[in-house]
Image (tube, rainbow over all chains, first blue to last red):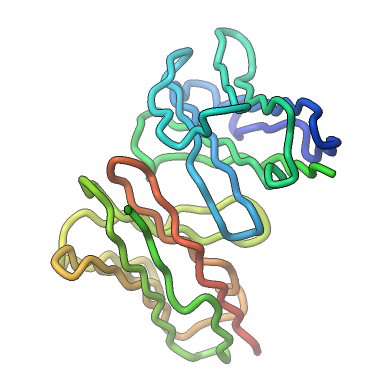
Length: 114
Length: 108
């Protein structure tokens, strides 16, 4: 497609539950990036993929967070045993290159952990 | 510790005013500094700066980088209500770091 698609738009989970977010990159883009935005302004890079391979995972929390990009499937970001502080908007972006300035952002998934 | 600091945190101006937003950084293995505009949803890319002293310009917006003093500024001249947004600065180095943003409100 011509836009990065993220589903669901909103997700509500109780503490301790699992959350799974999906991202379909723009057709032809081989790089996918995940970001977390807490409290509107605190934007944090999590992980990036080149096709199915992890490209950069320097921002990924060591526990509870995992991500995959498998062939012919949307990419996913999964949070096990969610905590209140995981409440955030999670943005996905895609690009034809790893260069940050060429990324197209999706509309985000708002996760609320109660 | 690597960090990106933006100032001011928020700013309210009248239409027609000129604003300067600041971004200072301490990031290992600096590669580039990027400015984004975020309105209701996802950020949109404004500028990428890699070299000191070269101004990037797009309409009423311009930006410059000082790699010696480790900062960048984003200028907006003749502000309009449509410029109201959060402006994010990000620095690409060993990791990709974002500042906390400057919230700009332009009132008619």
